[in-house]
Length: 311
Image (tube, rainbow, N blue to C red; front, side, top):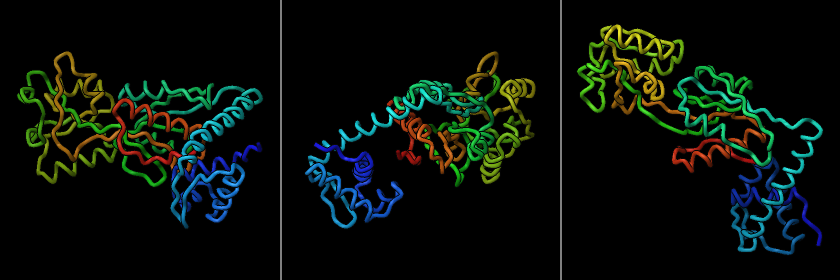
């Protein structure tokens, strides 16, 4: 028995995922007629009908379903063999540069750090910390491979996977009149001193707060800016202020006379996403994002995926 060319197996796997010749051909960077010829060659070489298809659409036959499942294993082990051999020549370590902010939920950081990739058994994750808008720029510049970013608007050069959406939390003194409520509404913050993350840290989030509160005609008596949660804690205490903080930061200062409540405002929510550069061709990054998506799904945290998870 003559084994089929691995390139034909890869073509069949992609077609089985897309079930559409045009989309599969685009993923494989080939023309549709070329893909059709490759599928025909594969079916002829194994003497099996793997797909039922017309001009565009394709559907796996029962034999094709079994064949594709085994073909994935063949391609996986072939790739792993190449990676293992390269590690002997080039050195065993693949470095993945991952960015996070100091406000990133530790759960997500731990999840990413726990990922192990069979294709990259010697992968090492190097963590970098910065503000989310800086992390986004570092991804675009190529100095980071993957980053967890919060409160960054959509950028054409980034692909993102939403992993969590959380409200702001309002930090206040334990004796504050708002502490009696389970959540705080914006109108309850009228004419109070607000403690906000400085606009130079994340201009998008700062402007969003200003836009929503102005539309509702809700204004503070004054605004103090902070760059660290320690500053936020001190300002809330010293000025009897109301601090707007991400959840993780709020929980870190909810002690020693400070309590927190969620802000009940749907238009002011903090979206955390896993982001990569949109044109990344790195197999390491692709496999890492796939694994992250699976882990997030298992943990019940995964949002709508918009990342290109092709092989």
